[in-house]
Length: 166
Image (cartoon, rainbow, N blue to C red; front, side, top):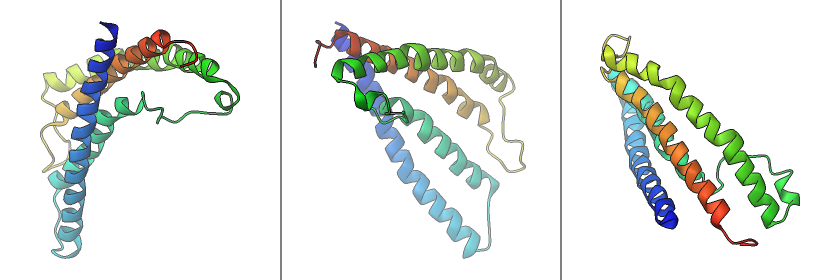
């Protein structure tokens, strides 16, 4: 049962990571279009510029949790390089329980009202011609925090249920 939960969390975050990959392709095409518009057609658009900015933020927020089980987040390996497998597992567990999960919960709680206020006024770009969907982008902060919490729980389960020495 626990293994299925971990696999489900990994699968959901894996799908969101794949979506982020597709959005990266879209962002590349969009930025190319922005450059062509600016330097060839001597034209620009606030909405298109903001779309690139929103896509960049969205890509990061969708992909961040996927890096966790792969050990691809920034870390200081000075200590763990000197430890055996069991010691590294304890360091990972400590970091997840003491740093990652409290940070993700803090992010979720502190962002809740911020996102809610955006939804209440259907917040839009303050720039003329900007996108009317800023509140949707802000919502992704909550989604990202939720992803990190779930992936952190999956990591704790994985680290505590793994046989010693594995």
